[in-house]
Amino acid sequence: MIKLGVPSKGRLMEKTFDWFARRGVTLARSGSDREYAATVSGAEGVSLVLLSAGEIPRELAAGRLHLGVTGTDLVHERLPLWTDVVTPLAEMGFGHADLVLAVPACWIDVDTLDDLDAAAAAFRAEHGHRLRVATKYHRLVRGFLRDAGVADYAIVDSQGATEGTVANLTAEMIADITSTGETLRANHLKILSDGLVLKSQATLWKSRVANLTKNDRAALAALVAQLGLD
Ligand SMILES: Nc1ncnc2c1ncn2[C@@H]1O[C@H](COP(=O)(O)OP(=O)(O)OP(=O)(O)O)[C@@H](O)[C@H]1O
Ligand SMILES: O=P(O)(O)OC[C@H]1O[C@H](OP(=O)(O)OP(=O)(O)O)[C@H](O)[C@@H]1O
Image (cartoon, rainbow, N blue to C red):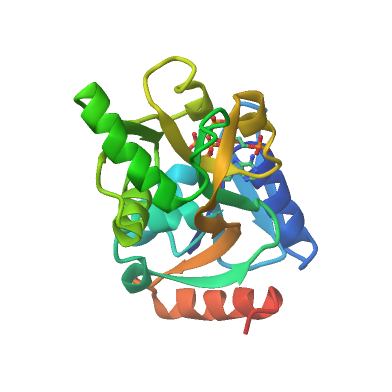
């Protein structure tokens, strides 16, 4: 069987189900609302696995899923050499989010990465410790800031409610995903004008390392054709 991994809840799950339904493949949860069992109709030899969006990159990279739907951000963050282990088959046109660097709106002298570099050096001189950036995207943020020549900072791990860390005094700035910008505004944060780290959207990925039997190959080819991706 081809194993297809789909986020188990929320916007991503519903929009993924709609995307497949428009292409004649019906994905559905079975059992009670709380049971993570699922069915596929309209495609032979495919089984549906419901799991956390954040775990789908790892499962694709381990070859336990043949196909998976998750955001570009999560694949790029969690799989260092992602091009070796997964191939994007389709950008799905939803789950759009930008990973951005944001600072307190009241930092009127800081609008760009160059300004941030200067502010970070001044911060360290004044406070004796590095400016703290709260994020769950450690790898992407480190890479982006390295390329931008900003070095005087420390990453603080934040797995949720990241925009609140500045008011809570556990960080001076953040890097997180935004779509409408509401959460940033509500927490008095502004995006650096050149602070876009990554544009993300929900994407259908194929594992490059999962084993395929002869039957699996046929099922995968049929599914890819049915989805109009061949
Ligand atoms: N406000 C948003 N608008 C659009 N896409 C978003 C938004 N928030 C998150 N996403 C996208 O949804 C995907 C899943 O995000 P996230 O890691 O927050 O999932 P989650 O539902 O909290 O999952 P988990 O079960 O792993 O906790 C990511 O690819 C992310 O880019
Ligand atoms: O720009 P906006 O439209 O305001 O959306 C951005 C918010 O959405 C996501 O959070 P989510 O609701 O998934 O919760 P989380 O903080 O637990 O990740 C993200 O982490 C931001 O906080």
